[in-house]
Image (cartoon, rainbow, N blue to C red; front, side):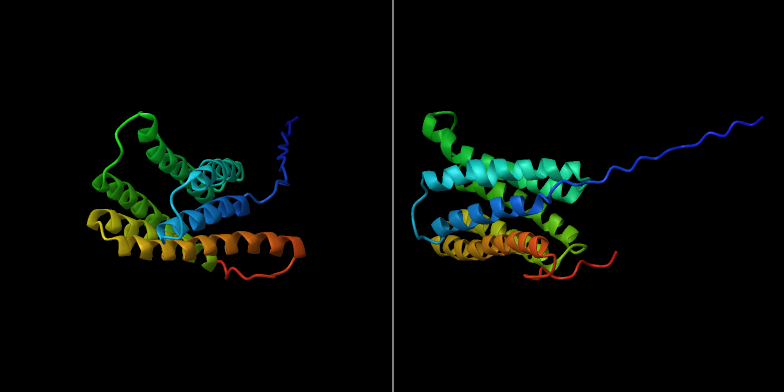
Length: 200
């Protein structure tokens, strides 16, 4: 008698919340506040550093880990990377103050922003398969990084000011994308549109 082996495939339903709004809010609010400084509205202070450590840094890393659990490679890479960007930026500013190394000069900072600009530009290509809101966030962020790099290399304050205003727009677009997802989920319909997802 032939024995029949039956395979039972258990599919576990994912009931965890969407971590994307947390990551986008952490990025968006911190970006707006830093770029209000770049635009010349106030100096670099502990408010920006605290936001960079906690909401821009830790919150995005948490969101990235949650995206990893959801098998979202793009979200995990983006949120974890930008969370660590904020932590690294804070420590670039703080380390020299406490004597843990020399301050980065303008060429070093420009190189830092260029590398982040290249990374963000490639990630923007990935958003072409996602929604319009994320496309705008990543496109404007790519421009922001290169503007900051040009500002550091040239030493022209006006370029950094322009980068500040562009960064405010970038941060606000991320806040919009985050809150749109929250409201659309709460109401079960499109309250704030984020644009159609590209067909695969």
